[in-house]
Length: 230
Image 1 (cartoon, helix red, strand yellow):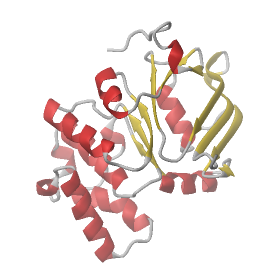
Image 2 (cartoon, one colour; image 1 turned 45 degrees about the horizontal axis):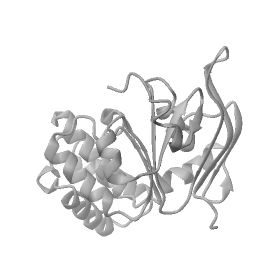
Image 3 (cartoon, rainbow, N blue to C red; image 1 turned 90 degrees about the horizontal axis):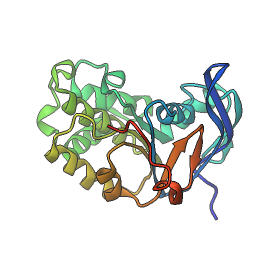
Image 4 (tube, helix red, strand yellow; image 1 turned 60 degrees about the vertical axis):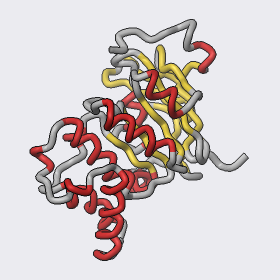
């Protein structure tokens, strides 16, 4: 089998020493694989995504990404160019004056030319039905519109894997259907955190339950349904 895109080995993490959040967690994601992660509020789902891109560091264990052990900030900077994280709160992701500038920001950091950035930005906004939003002030958008723009900033980077944290929050039915259609057509691997079972069912049959600091096999989902999954 090919080298995994991501491999987390016996990961521990705690915000406070006496309150462990993740304990001995293992996870492997291969190229093109789509995996959903469910779990109760506060079970560590968002933290898991943040660990993958180095926004927080494990207290124990190893993170391999794209064939290499990742430990330093320089290691994870490279990971962030290949693993696209869509934050749960779009306001954490959007900081430029206009929609087009937000989408273009990461592309310039990748060293794209101005012409390439303009073309990719235009194509990505069109893909999400946001062409008319290019010059809109991001700050004035609705929550659902911001979420779509946040997704656009990540898709424009053409990452090898998408890390999606509650991607349907704030979306109306039409916008959610559009996101499902787009994600279904993408070749990238995906790691999706969501409470929306109908949404997950349209994208992948492969699900894990994050419970007691570890990822349980999908066969355990019905035996141990999560709580507080409003």
